[in-house]
Length: 130
Length: 130
Image: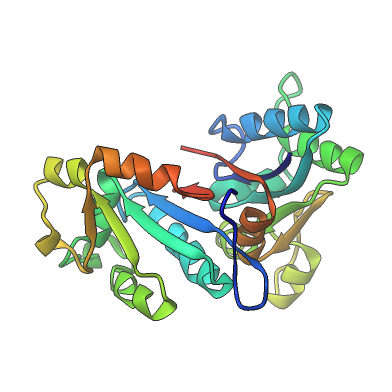
């Protein structure tokens, strides 16, 4: 931790990256990752979310889960702003491969190429990969 | 160095918990400190004492319990993930009116804040899973 930061109470502030790589349904990883993000927000760390691979689908507009009997939790991503979680990134290659664009997503995101993804990861103190 | 460990997969179905155990054991033998081992997703299944593997196989749950006893390890099972998957300690059993508990020796049930704290307090948080 070269340039360590501190919050108002003097506790350490670290850079946390949540790396989301899996589709929203089919496995529970995406939902439980979001639960960590929401709980973790109370700790006032420097939080970023990166969506790669099928993780891009977590942000897809128009999700309809009635047929599989599961809760559609995609509206929660729109609430992240209220938790001061505002740095949302998507991997351009993953998005292109799936024929998606920023217009297809429920929240505004910053699109990163492979080199920028590498820089983002390099810059973190903690990476939680789900 | 001070390590935090995150285990995201259950025993036997995935090598992640074996790898996490071997890493934790090796780190301790090398004189490193383990701040906490946090069990999330199906990783919470590492913490049930009802596990009964074949006699000629390793007992992953007992391995964790024995390592915890030998090194005073903090083994924490996520409460939300545990409730979904039926991992119960005596307090949780009482609170949710269950007729039994199954938490293994050396494990305790607590919240996701314990994972974030491990990320903040450790020099490295190592994630075991897919």
